[in-house]
Image 1: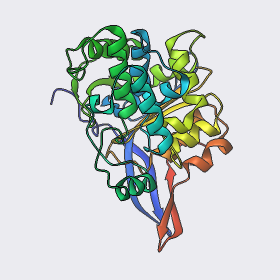
Image 2 (image 1 turned 90 degrees about the horizontal axis):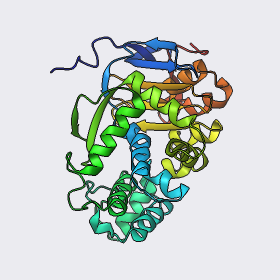
Image 3 (image 1 turned 180 degrees about the horizontal axis):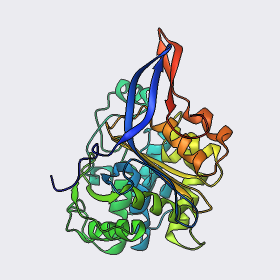
Image 4 (image 1 turned 180 degrees about the vertical axis):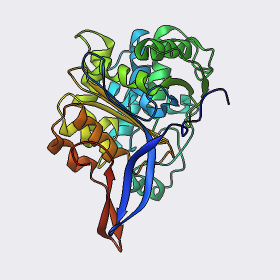
Length: 324
């Protein structure tokens, strides 16, 4: 591999405590940036090259706005979302597609069940099968298709890396992160996925969260922070973090990624080396506290109990921050 292994310089970020013993340890990397872009904290390798997965969606949404995406704030939040496929999510995706003269059948993201267990149960009990609509990235794909329509680009091949849309989104990722895209692959949903560094990801979220009024970045920040349920859904920690901290822009990503930006321009980015989602909330809460957020606001969201017979017998704890 040409890029360094993401585990090479990883350090312990969270310990899983069961009873009076540490049962396991999650390693990874953390970057915390101050409002002026200077570094407040790094753990591990701040310049590790990562696949930011769905944490790139707000950056991609900025790129879509730059090329003609015409949506309201709820729709824009869905473009940035990894949603639960609850009914309200599906309604907004359908509305966005309809206004662009598109149909659900135009979506090319990988068919899947809803992320939310209750939504998945309801979907299946009504005789439905895995669908691109209910896959968590359908908002992003609806936005990609709609942007292509309004920009006058073809829609059948919108997932091709050489399509004008994907070239525009790659350029948006590079400009917002300040880091050249050195690698491209295919994300789980089928869309092109662009590399960046952990510091670059944090930098982009700080720029989005503190952007000037009238910019695409500010529109994304407003949509996400004012409509956090549309970005994830009921019970999801990304939604709960944004509900807890005014103006926060936060987005989780598969394989242990999390990024967040604050309205003062401060930002954090996290990569769990083993790809686990379990420690992400507590690590993000600790990183936000280092960034200046009142720990009392984020501690309840980050709390991750360890269960024994359905009862808490321990917890996942961060190795840094005010509670370490």
